[in-house]
Structure formats: structure tokens, C-alpha cells
Amino acid sequence: MSSSGRDNEHQLVGVVGAGVMGVGVAQSLSQNDHRVILVDVSDAVLDRARAELRNNLRTMVLFGGDRSIDIDATLDRVHFTTDYDALGAVDFLVENVTEEWETKREVYRRIDTICKPETVFAVNTSAISITRVGGVTNRPERVVGTHFMNPVPVKPMVEVIRGFHTTDETIDETTRFLAGMGKECTVVQDSPGFVSNRVLMLTINEAIFLVQDGVAEPKAVDRIFRTCFSHQMGPLETADMIGLDTILKSVEVLYESFNDDKYRPAPLLKKMVDAGLHGRKSGRGFYVYR
Image (cartoon, rainbow, N blue to C red; front, side, top):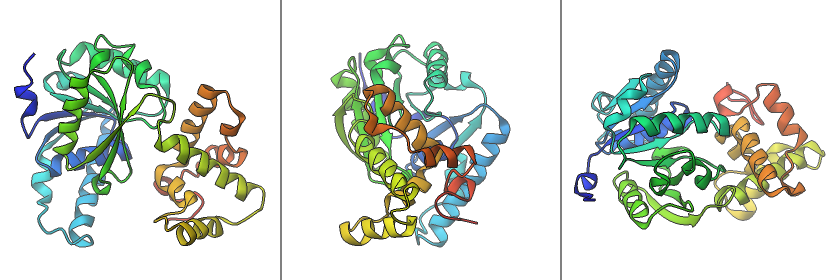
């Protein structure tokens, strides 16, 4: 199969899921002149995504000093729709739906019948098995993990995960695709949590246990990591940015996958998620944002 059409610098890219990560991926793509089809389940979700994307671009212009961004032109390159059939023409697809297996499985069963056989499916996940995702499609060799970091437009690195059936060609295409977004990548093997989240989620979960056990307040925990280890953000600040609901789902996947008590979710984490304290996106987590 020739990949000449796939090497086109400005591909038509599908993005499924218009949450924080999906908007970030769409923004990064559109800023690099790709045309994007952003799909989600409701017009209300897409309206919020459009507003968030515009606000993100305005922030980059006003506070980031990037005067080269044409906000209207960047937005025009993103087509917001609830129609999955619009994905039939995409060359590459990045999926960003919730970290719940049943939801992901249904999405892949659906898009597998719509997208071209040669379309690569990039799973933007923090913990779910790429091999497992590939197994519900008729193209497991063209399913690859792309773990983007938040916020996507400003993070230079993407963790690329090779599933059991993922081919070298798919890895190469993914590397070129990410380079077209201005991203570097590191390829790792398929294992729960991969590299980044197998370490990060354990760190965040243990930091939450520290707060729960009264060892330290959130500010103290984060200050130690920022000051002593030169981290830009502490683990609890990072948790708020990612979303505590996402943190909980990721830790639960690790706990279920390894059957190891060291991944047991902190009761305080569960309590905060139940209370709707999801971090920045809800206005309150370990810190208050509005």
C-alpha cells in the first residue's frame, strides 16, 4: 500500500471526544494547518468545545505573546459535528473519549465500520490497553496509542504505545503525524499505565493519601516537589489540572490490571470525585479556581 497520500503535510484528521484533551488535540492540529473533524455526542458539548477553543487561542495571543495565530482561520479549520459518518474521509483519527472500557469499545466498533481501512486509529489514553482496543476492530495492526499530555498545545512530547499487533508502518506514520503537529515522541510497549502514568498515578495517589492521613496540606506537598525536585507543578496541582475523575479512572485501571494493593485508590480521591470536586474543570479540587 502506498503511503504517499498519508504523507501530505496537512491531513484531514478526525478527533473523537470534545473534552479537555479532545479540544487540545484539535487546537494543536488546526494551529498546524490541519483540517479537523471534531465529533462528540451532543451540540451542547460541541458548543462548549468551540467556546473553549476560541478562549484558548485568545489566551495564547493575549498572554502568550503569539501574535502569529489567526483565531478565526484556526477555528475555521475545525468542523464541529455529532455525525460520526463525517469521519469516513479522515486520514488519521485521534480518539479522546472517557477512560471507561465500555464506552471506548462501542466507539471503536462504530468508527471501524465508517473509516477507511487504511485510517490509523490513535488511542489517546492514560491507561487502557492498546492491544485490547485493537482487538475490537478489524485493523489491530493500525491501532496505536498516543498519550498526549495536558495542555496539549504547549506540551512537546507524546508517549506512543505499540500494541501487540501494531506494525512498524503504523508507528512510522504516527511519528510523522506527530511531527506535523510539532510534537516529539517516545515509543514504549503496551502495559497498563505505560511509562508516564504507571509512575505518575502512583505518585498522585500516594500524595492524596498524605493529605488524607494528615501528614501535610496540599500546598506543602506540592511545594516540596516544586522546590526540592524542581518540578514545575506538584502532584496535587497536576491532579487538579488532569481532573480527579480521570485520575480515579486511571488508578482503578492500574489496580484492576495488576491486582496490586499499591494501586488501591485513596478513599479521599473517591470522596472528592463523588462530591464533584474534579479540579480545574469543575472550579475546585485540592485548590479553588473560581
